[in-house]
Image 1 (cartoon, rainbow, N blue to C red):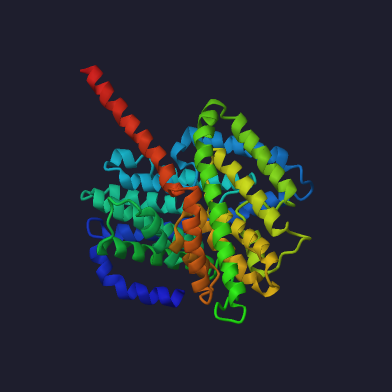
Image 2: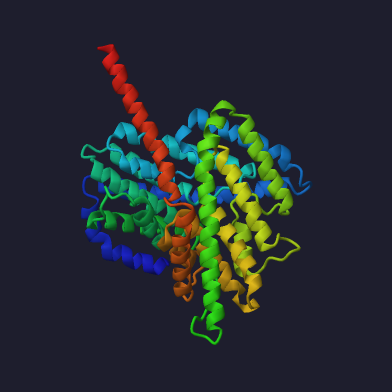
Length: 460
């Protein structure tokens, strides 16, 4: 990736200068470098936080019943008091900011303070055993950093702000997973869903440059690596097992899409009911969520805590066993429960890595119905199917799994799985989860503006 990225940076270097017009070039490049540095440091600290938690519960599986509820209460209260718009993954805030037209509105969702809160509160949540990811929050962090830089320029505009937000989001995801292509695709497929924003050459070039440069910076700090290692899985759709392999793709696509869609729908509808309760009972709700997470951990041999990176890596590389990791289906169920509880507690944290881990477990579970040689391939297809079902970004789903496992030979099966899952998911969750969650921030902003206009009229 390093050599390729360097070549691409040289090729697009000149055109990129015009793509970032309107903002000081050094500020833009400096901001992207900052995103890469922050993402790399965040990744290292997140791994350390998760390991500290796992070490603290070695003596007893019942320690989380005290540590996790207490930790979630503290993180939830701190987030609500000091960083109210740093909660959840941050992608809904980023999408909502793209829809807003004034600095005052956008600054409520994107700022350096929010970025700092995102990092700090996510680390505290991982220290408490919450089932969250650190990859997607870097989208919010990256968007906040670049937007804050653009805001200080005299020539700032809605178009420039949107370009910087998209570029920052792409840079954050690229640096978090050492996956520049996934960062680019995610920014253009997920963050740019709105019909009000149209992809043009300047936006595309800014996004590409930011993702590549942030990825290179992260590599310099962390080294050149593949997030989940290298997978040698393959699936020959033209082999003598044609019907079997095609059936494997269909199962992972249909089941992954259905389960992912149900999971997304649960988060959406649950949030509408839990949020008022969280406001009314700011201590009780996070504490109960912590108890649920601790229970899921107890029932999964402590495997459902944290990001899910270690478990997904084990599934992908075939290094898991019933002795040290729960079976695929059991793990996936407990991981989903823990992730839902973490989400409802009002803490910052993403669902991307937990979703990939859940999907890996589902794929391993589905593989029990097929010949043993299909297991490695079905783990990857399970990841793609479930992730595409949850987020409904099929291209991002197969690109990110292909990139973080360094496996190009599974491209066609992963593509097929992703698009099957995407269409099945829409049956259970008609609108993408991040768009629906973004609406709550837009509705809140609309209420604030109405109240402001009303106050002005009353004062006249």
